[in-house]
Image (tube, rainbow, N blue to C red; front, side):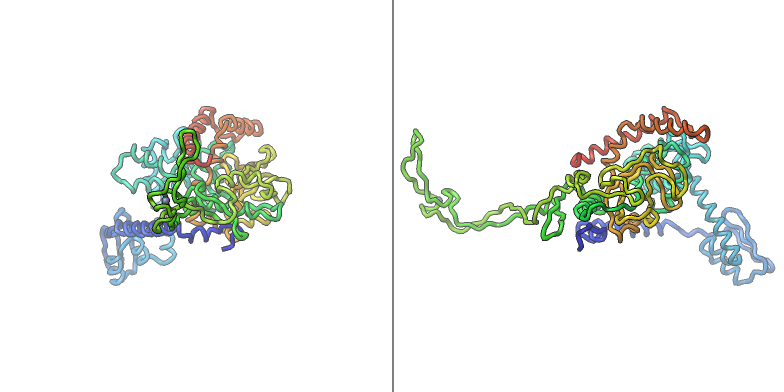
Length: 511
Ligand SMILES: [Zn+2]
């Protein structure tokens, strides 16, 4: 392997991950079987008649279909149909079928949505008014796509235990990473003073690779320009640190970086030492001396006493014991987590933007611009702000290096079709060119845990900053202001702050 970057494929193929992968595949096929057995056969119609040449079918929902000019064959085909779709296919011309299918699919979707909303309504986290869903304590309604996403998650969690009560279901949801991530994501969106920008952000993510972290931050990409010639260590450390978390789901604190034969190496704590068997004939009693001088009460040496164990020879029959010894991995560079947290201080960790060449961009350090200089709009290009993309890396400017960035939805100022703009992002790792277009689509690159430190920083004095943001916005415009009260901001900030306690527990090794 080339070790300039630790590639995604290397992480995926490495043995440490293999077991989890097999188990996951097995689970998946079990779930598919279950799914298949759940769909029991139900006759798709109530009644079927062929009178003269008109075939009339009464479907289970009471609707009536008829086909003039039908034949005996049509009648037999419909009576053997496994589902409504097959019936439509038999009685309708191709184009009518397509329309009916579309209407049917949309109706099914709306029905499922309605059923899903009813489930959301009984959970503490949601407040439902008609078909409008709110996160309890917030006044901005959830966009329909996000409601559907929540319903999927709730349904998945609920399917683990259909018997559970709704109180229990809420508890189970609070333990579910994807659920917590969506909830946090929407709360940060509520703190964005521009409701339509936050709304667009959700649409944008749904249409691209929807990757968020547990704390609700958006995972995105952008290009930068390398200022120094040799940021190999930055590539290695940032890729190793984030992929250990995202692909292996391991704690980076358990790894050490070494330099051996010109290549960086990642070594787990378990591989730092080995036990070796030592064979020996030296007498363990006299340590090979054959005896010792006794001392008198004044500390002066007196007479020689011969060792009983070896009879004075200093040697015994060969015996063995285990000894722990460091394995040679080359030059030790440092512990992975410490190296990652120290990246902003390293001279070779210097990048800039291609457009202005003025930004000081470092992996592990926030890049920001004054938000009043940003252009709040939904345009794609040529508007002020820090650009990012969900996966269409060629849209976000030039540069020799792609980086993964975390973005707080509260700080997004504009969303276009394929790219967005924000006034602050945190670059967390460099991305090999060949991975830039696929890493955020790779199911084994799990972004959920990529953000603990950033989350803690973002929560500091959040109430003040959120209020400030809204105040600044309302000074600029005299209309189109989202109604959000100080009490609501406090509510949301309190909910978001609950994550702080959880994070501190989880990353005690990092802090
Ligand atoms: Zn001895």
